Image (cartoon, rainbow, N blue to C red; front, side, top):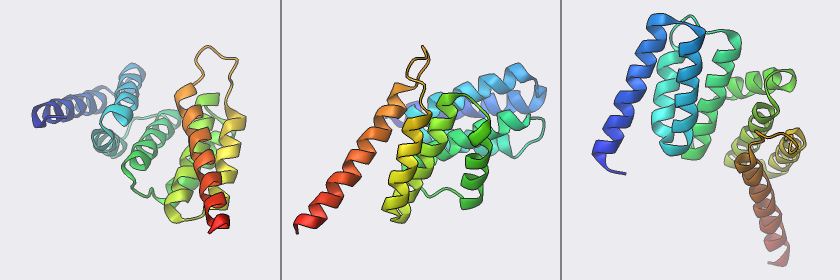
Length: 167
């Protein structure tokens, strides 16, 4: 990624954040969330910056605030940054009974990935298992990319466990 591309991405994120804060409409919130979702994959550091700037303001519904916090935690995990433990608990509690199946799966996946970063491998496997259970594979909009990551990380942990037993 070139510096110019990164600057353009950050500028677009800043414009989206300003637009959201200026209007605070549901439509603008959804647009900003969509931008953060795309950035979480394409440019995770820009997604964290965007989420921080928008979460600092007022005017978001609880659902939009939680979705943005979920995307921020997802981007932090991609960057190998440990997310705030309180935020992770809030996300886990919220998405136990709210959001789409994809959101619920993502919340558990993030918990698992953060547990790996902390070295809590058995807990990570538990979260990955719960994430897989929350996927709705019969839905047209199932997030198979995240589901794939859930299973890959689980397999890596099992492989790591078996490697330790052999040595």
